Image (cartoon, rainbow, N blue to C red):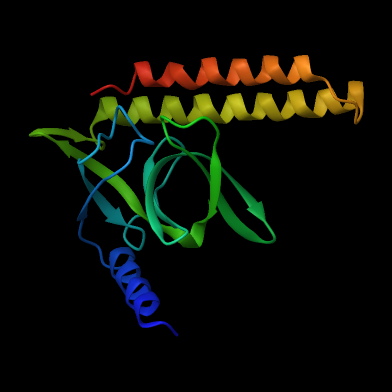
Length: 180
């Protein structure tokens, strides 16, 4: 096995294990404006925190990268649990196996400002955003199924354009509530 790969896997195992909070610096804009470039995230390792709910911001591994995104649903695939995630500043959701989960973000620090995600207001806001996305994605899945029933395999470019514009509009709404 490649030595760098082994080292990376060992580091990720250390991040996942234990019960004390850990910190990590951020790069990227997928959770902007809530998590800004250069913010410091404090997270509880997955081994110590099994209370992850829709709306929580989690840290997970994807393609040799650590990602912090919001949980917007869960589903089972081939007998294993998968989590649906979405960055607040991204267009569409993604998913990852629960085995890739590293921990739940509990605090965001940027330029001396601290946002405690365990406080009442941020917890309620996170739950509402999680429910919002879960309902929206369920509605979009319904529209896709309904389109297939009505139109079969024929292309309906106008309907696709309407759905994409609707998703773009609804993608911007939660950002109004997540500005620090």
